[in-house]
Image (cartoon, rainbow, N blue to C red; front, top):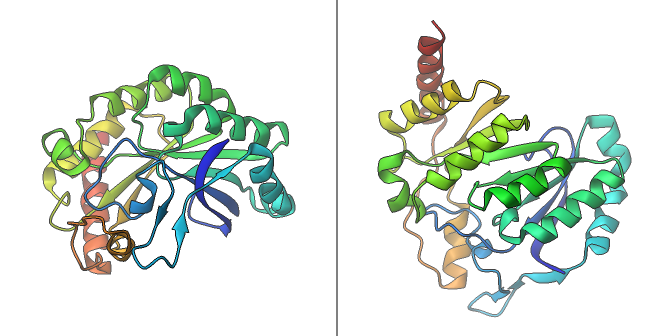
Length: 249
């Protein structure tokens, strides 16, 4: 049994093609801007007004019953199953079972991960994961302040997956006033330079959807109130592109 809090079908932003995304409970990090604050705890939670309970136990078979409904859409679009959260590696044994079941059904598998788990856990899950969406959130100097821990283990696991031949896309949340700094963009560029097999990098502009959910759960939320603007997003993309171009010369 695993603890999840949602299954969303027909998703287009969590890996290639049309996907079913399983959102898992539990996360070892404490990101200031977490957009799924209801995923931090492994336990079920209820809104303060009692209107909704978040988190329930599920079996692999129950999850696969939902996933298999859309096999034709996966085949036609190059999609499949994505595990998200929270952090799927927080329940690594259950995540392995789900991904293994999907692979046995010839469904493409993807995992969105913060990278904070033992190398042994990643080594086990690597053969049943076709693509890792690997979060890179902050540079060395501010990582512990913004994320709740340093990034040594995260970077070690990224290097392990890269050197093991995994397909990886970096996902980098950018939050105005918190990590939209020259240091952070240089850090992203350095990581990509050291890991040339990484398929792509995606900047993820901040949105404040987590604030309302945190309020309903009585949880603190210290990130900005305003979403990132299109102008900011374009500026960040240009800055990173310029850095990457400079390093390739």
